[in-house]
Amino acid sequence: MESINELTSQEDWQNVWKRSMDSPILVYKHSTSCLISARAFKQLKTFQKSGEDEIDCYMVKVIENRRVSNEIAKDTNISHKSPQILLIDKQQVVWNTSHWKITEKRIRKEVR
Image 1 (cartoon, rainbow, N blue to C red):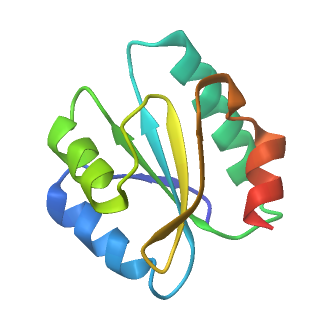
Image 2 (tube, rainbow, N blue to C red):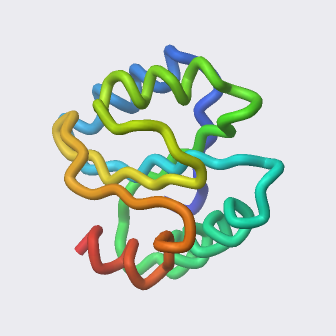
């Protein structure tokens, strides 16, 4: 996939959540007012642009789409943080991390 799709509605999230039953997905929670989030988002974009690992990537802006972010936390049973990244397979979070631990190298390691 060559882009990071933004989740802006609860319906968007529910569709992606269901899609995880067919193939793993990455969901990134982003704060548009946080420098740590900006750095983490850059790491995700570097991972995604390399094209070495094909996985659908999604982002939710937590300030602008709080309801979506809250629903993700509820459905995954993972407390909200931002920035935060979740690797989801078959509606199970198989890996998650946040803040400075979000690096291109760690994402690549977990996706493989």
